[in-house]
Image (cartoon, rainbow, N blue to C red; front, side):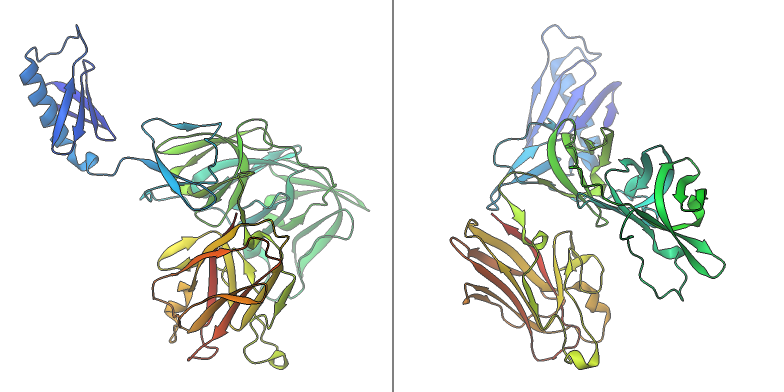
Amino acid sequence: MAATCGGVRATCQAGTLTCCCGAIFNRQGLGGRLLVPKGSFCPLRSKSAHKICIVIAFFLSLSLLSQEPALLELEAPDGSFVSHDLVAPLAAPLPDGVAFIRYSAKSTESLEPAGGARVQLLDGGRVMAGFLGGDGDFLDLSIIGDVRLRVSVEELSSVVIEERIPVDWSRKLEAAPEGDRLYRLAPRGLERLDGTLEEFTAEGVLFTTRVGQKSLAWGEICALFIEALGDELEDPPSGTPVVVDLVDGGRVHAGLLEIRAEEMDLVTRAGRGLRLPQACVKEVFVLGAGAAFLSELEPVASKTEGSPFGDGFGMLWPHRVDRSVTGGLLSAGGELYTRGIGVHAPSRLEWTLDGSWNALRMSAAIDDEVLSLPSRGSVVFRVFVDDELRFESVSTSAGLSVTEIAEIDLREAKKLILEVDMDRDMHVADRADWLRPVLY
């Protein structure tokens, strides 16, 4: 970012102006400090004139400098955090005790949307993507922000392009009991092929069935399921192991190399470099830093499971991980959440704990998706630890502020229950979210 005055070009970043001669003007409130390198040459020989020119250039750049300096929030497992000024990039290895990393300010950059293929990876990663082609064991994808991502067949679990599935197709798309499985468009719906994926090509895939090998174009493939071979996935070859949550709900496991104001550099399990613009990134979760998400643990019991009318009516609303109960992205108070549990009241989820966790911290709300409905729902949230009530909210509806739940003590706890109950509006629009539930 730069401005020019009196023939002197001054660049500005994070509240600092640097003249062509190397003189630096640091903004400090309404004042400032000018540092001129000894022996430097500038078109403005007078130091006072030099400073005046720099100050004028400074004000010419006010639209840039009025923006907050680029900062990262480095959060510990217990929720405490410090800020890191990105005048200096944050590089691996990360400081001790950092479990989560976020840009402090939201980007206003518009992003290229991802393609229509839902790609699921064996390590829990997932992306919405378009096909760029393939080469042998590697598949090249275009994800949000027009970022290129290469994954290997060893990482891949499934690819589903829902927009290609015929509307009258009622059967479930699922993996084969053994081997790989591919669904492709056919005159009468979908054709299912069981066999072995031989390789990816620029045009599509080579797939072997009992009757021989077929070359299938990307345009005719609706779904692909890859058999997991049971081999342990290799860690990224360098960097700090992290999980990057993307703003479209995608998730990528990688090694973090460096974070800068506008982008971050990572390396994938396949050993390929991955550069993500700031606008793509919601949060970075550092693996092995002493924190975990409750949403990643399977509940041992899920009583009532969103059945407001009773099972006899067949209207069940199973809980969803990292999604609202209807399958959309979690959203509350106008904010997107990439981690949480979506339920429909009445709901009661129970987990067995081993006594090793210190605490649980999270918030709760009715999902913003009901704001388009006539009713905004009304629920009560409760948290039980070893059958003791530890938290109970007031009646909550959509459009209100998110309910912040005081930290729940879990020391030596063996059982955790999250309960959502219907309130005055009964079952109508009671689509509730447990948001960013962090265990540490």
